[in-house]
Structure formats: structure tokens, C-alpha cells
Image (tube, rainbow over all chains, first blue to last red; front, side, top):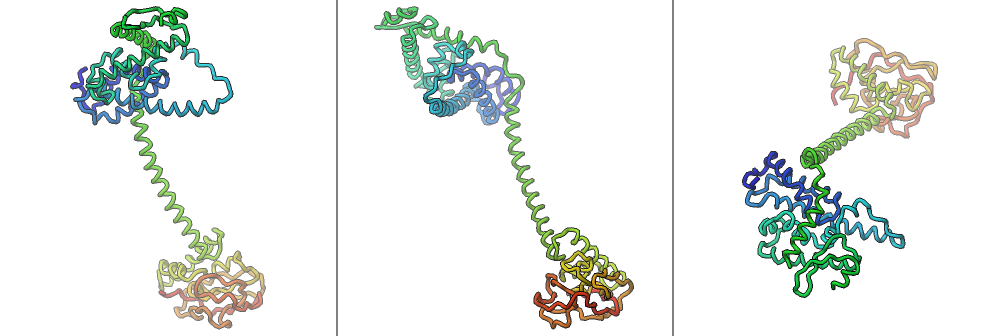
Length: 202
Length: 222
């Protein structure tokens, strides 16, 4: 549905927007947080906020990008809160062994999402919005509340940071779970890094 | 280089989101419940504020009523209050029958004057050693009791009948009045204006109360 078809304040239109965009917003927030349960909570909270502000939405803004902006704000707040909680948990856990991570969560999360989680929220969102949702620069700019002219450079920087994260992780653990493209010396090639071969590739 | 990495990235992202694809969209419209839950606390806050205001007004009224009744009857016992008011209203009814004043004016006079003889005549007052004298101001409202020879005898019934219209006793004793004008047998003077001072000498218990020849007329307007 085109954004022009949505009527601000219309409950029926918001229902349609919810059904059409819920998953994409969830994917983006999951890319930022790396925690599915937290992402679902944040997206629900974001839709509650969006529904309250729906009458103020203007059709010149892409509706889904507008939703993304709200959801990313919620996710950002969540990440800040959870960082504080992590610090508190770390202090409480001093001297004790670190608890085992949830196996289901570990199985679900790939190296890529681990690396995305280590990026800034804006960089993670940029990568998901462009490379999974196929958003234009204008839509990304609106969702991230950033100048459209800076989106391309921000995206390039985000991808570079992500690539470094992936390589660094692969080298640290010595066993990437999936083939990882490695670029060195201006030569483009795809290498399958598994253990010692990854070290040799550098 | 970039295209390769982008392709790889897109494939990885699609694979990473596969578990989400099978998940159902949350049923209903949870955001509507969220909006309701936002309106709910607002309404709840307003309702809670109203309840607090009503409760405060109720408590203030109840407290002032209790204080007024306690000050009026000289007792903190609610049974005493009701007895006192019943006596006073009965007496006012009597005077109303005589056509001399209205019940409202009579009750108003009682309220202004303070405890009357009904309180003391009940036998539950602060002194039960003998017939209790009626405070002077209240003598305007109720007929004086008949004296009893026995110290612990219960007071006589309130005489019925039309009052003569003229008071047979002085209508009121101002504070600080001479001691011989205060009826005997009182251990503790009641509170309220028109009562004798606290250091007033108390005659021995059982001393007969001066008889009243005629029913006491109703009080006039103050």
C-alpha cells in the first residue's frame, strides 16, 4: 500500500500498516538488539507509541520508515537500559563463573547477528534496512533521522566495521560457522575460512 | 569486492531471519490494548483523586460531627450522644406541643447552650452518686426533675403538660454567678457556656434538688 493511501488517525489504516510492516520492523530491531524476545517487546512498545501518534503522522513521510524511527528509538532506549543492567550484573557476579548462555538463543543467533549487535544501533539498522528491506536512501534517512546525503557514506562505513568485526571474530575463534568473504590487498575473492586456513589467509 | 560482500550479507541476513518467518503475527492489535491501558491509568488517576477528595470530605465531616457531639454532650460515648439528643428533642417536642416555639428553634437553642439535663439524668454521666442537677441554661428547655430523697434514686419522669409560659426559675446563670444559685449534687460541671465555674463548691450528694413548681418553659431566642 502506498503511503498516500494511509489516512492519519484511521484505525483501519493503522491495522493494515501493522500487518504489512510488523515483521520488517521486528527484523530491524532484532538486528540492533540481537535478542528476539527483547526485539518483540520493543516492537510492541513501538506500535503502541505509533498508534498514539498516528493522528500526527503526515503522508509526506514514508509510513514504514516512520514506524522504524519510533521502533529504533525504543530499541536504543532498551540498549541503554540493558547496558546499565549488564554493568550491575557484572558487579554482582564478580568472582563467580559466568552463567551459560541460553542454548536456544545461541543456536538461533548467527555470527552475523552477533557482529551486528556489536555495531552501533544506527549502523546495524542501516545494514538491515538496506540489505534486507531494500530501503532507499531517503527512507533510511527518515528512519534514522539523518541527512539523506550522508546515508551512502554511513552505509559504507557500517559495512566496513561489520566486515572487520566478522573477520576479527573468525580469527579469534578460528571457526566461522559459514563461508565468509575476505578481501585483502584490493583483490576480491571469497575464501572459506575454517580454523587454521583463516589464519593463513591473512 | 563490495558486491560480493553485499551478496554474502544479504544471504546471511535472509538465513538469519528464517526462524522469524514461521512465527505468527501477534494476534489482534496489541497497540489498541496499549492505548486503552494508557487511557486507563489517566481515568484511574482521576477516579482515585475523586475518591481521595470524597474520603477527605467524609472524614472531615465525621470528625467535626464527633467533636461537636462530644463537646455538646460532654461525653465521648456515642450512646450518650444519642440519649442526649433524644431527650433534647423529646423536650423540644413537648414545648412544640405547647405552641410556644418550634422544634428547630428549640434544638438550635440546645446546641447553643450545650449539655442539658438529659445527659445527667441518664445516670451515665460523670457523676451518678445522686440526682444530678440540671445546668441552669438547660432548665429553660426541660422541666426540672422532681427531687428524690434517696441518694441513688433514679430521676423522676419528665413532667408532661403544658408549660405555664412563665419561667419559675431564673432562665440562666451567667458564669461566675453566686454559688447559692447553682443546684447541688453536681460533682463535675458540664462544659459549655452558662455553666458554673469548675471551682464551684459542690454540695453533698443526695441533697435534694430544689423542686420546680411548674414545668420549665421553652427557651427563647438567644
